[in-house]
Image (cartoon, rainbow, N blue to C red):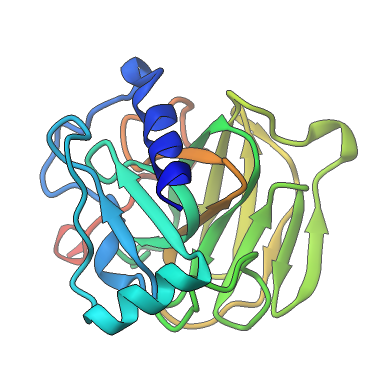
Length: 227
């Protein structure tokens, strides 16, 4: 496990010059506080050290035995290791847009989920609490395939996947192009969600996007910004 974490950290550190920093505060980022039953490691100060999240010791140890190990770096913008993570802000507004860049391929998924989702049971999309697109292009909710990207349009390393959500449908954009693969069914207050495994590394982008959001959609706003 220690070897895999160090390998993951090296990959996360290498090639990091393409990261786009947020200039606005507060910033939406990956939220380690909502990683239930998970062992989250947050790298700080140039990847000099790691520390566990605010979970009980017994939980962290148990999760380590089961192999659940998520690493969050680059100020809450990059995820690697094994497991899932929610963003730090829910999607309150009518039309939200966010992006993920695939830095390294593997097993991964992105979409939306409620706080009741089990972030250890990957792939997500197996219950009513998550709606995600998996790395094979399939969109899943409640263990049902809702849609699928064309076989010749599967995301590859270096691609940017955009997600729109309007509280009814989730849609996928690949490098700025609408894939016309809507999926729906999730209910309640949802957050952006991402999971990784098998050496996958993803960067989240909640502002200063690589591609212009579709008309009517915009970056995630905090509730006080909406009103």
